[in-house]
Amino acid sequence: MIAAMIIIFVIGYLLIALEHPLHMNKASFALVTCGILWSIYAIWGHDPHMHEAIVTQLGDACEIVVFLIGAMTIVEIIDRYGGFSFITEHINAKSKRHLLWILCSLSFVMSAVLDNMTTTIIMVMMLRRLLSDQKERWLFAGLIVIAANAGGAFSPIGDVTTIMLWMDEKVSSVGLFANLIIPSILAMVIPVFIAQYSIRDGKMQTITTLAEKNPVLHERHPQLSKWMLIIGVSGLLFVPVFKTFTGLPPFMGIMISLGVIWGVTEFWVKRYKIDSKMGGRVSSALHTIDMPTILFFLGILMAVSALSEVGVLNTVADEMNTKIHQPVLMTSIIGVLSSIVDNVPLVSACIKMFENMVPPGTTDLYLLTFVEDGLFWHLLTFCAGVGGSLLIIGSAAGVVAMGIEKIQFFWYFKHISWLALIGYLAGVAVIWLESLCPFFMLTAG
Image 1 (spheres, helix red, strand yellow):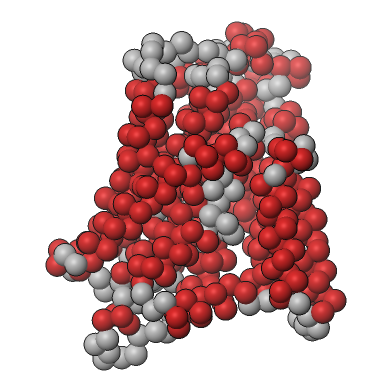
Image 2 (cartoon, helix red, strand yellow):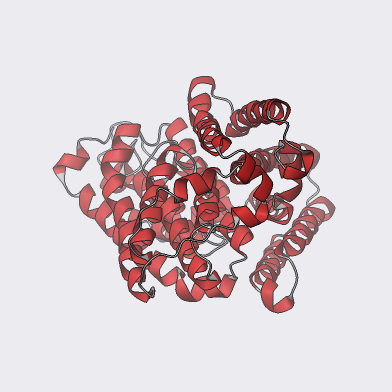
């Protein structure tokens, strides 16, 4: 049964990668793969608790899906009111290379506060206001994905996996920042530095497609652009704060923010007599969000959860611990795997597998890498987050960029993956060197 499920998953994954040559949307392959995997488990697994398992896994997947729907809707309504044009008008990039550094630096910083998925949505939508050439936008978007994933790695609230490790007390906020800030910066700076030389440099010629998309709303009510940008971004920033104080999942915070923005836009529609054809309502924006990308998320997350449910990921972790027995190599492999399957179940499996590795009073150097803020957990945090940049479907940020810009899987693999790999390996090397430095060892618990 397990062998059959792995084969089906691999076939489904290859079909997703070949969506453009096959001229079929990747969401269809993800949904079919998900259905077949769970059907195999239901027929041959003989698990009396399967119904509870699928409901639990669906709940975990829907947390991300609902969050994505809320975030994409907020970003879309900001765009409709011209909020991103307000930002792009104040970006004084002297050249396209300068613009690349500005956007990637913003992505890096923003993803440490927001999550990498929301950051990527915002930055790619801004990118569409600045560059008209599709292939140039693909290159910029790929590097934004790298920057967003790198920026989320050193912050305890920057990524789902860092939140998991932080809440389980595998890493501390201070230890995470002290040990991962430099590797994360390198994981962003090195690829951008190399990629800038492949850009045809020249003066910026900013384009504005918003006026074509929604001319009446933008022209008649330009004063609302700034306010919608402030309210929308504040709503997104509210999410990590809400989670920190309440402990509730991020999707609940994004729903509150969306509800508030919905109320504000309804008030504006009545106050300024905005015609329904102008598209100033949230209900109108909901019709234009990228549902195929959302359904792809649901399908791929549930497909991976089926493999997790039958113990495939735990088996992989057990085999690595037994046969490899080396923290740097183990976590590096996990990072590569996180570009193929979702990093959330991978990290969850690692937490369960390695959380009781350290017996009281041990002096074994290998086992001591598993203490709080130990080398293994810092490497795992970095590798699971940054490793997702190696493939376009390896992270939520990559999938979102792929959906918005229609980036082809093999184009990303050819032009972006090798850049991400260089930054990834540089970051791993620096973390290992830091573990040998007494200053950084002081942060370990």
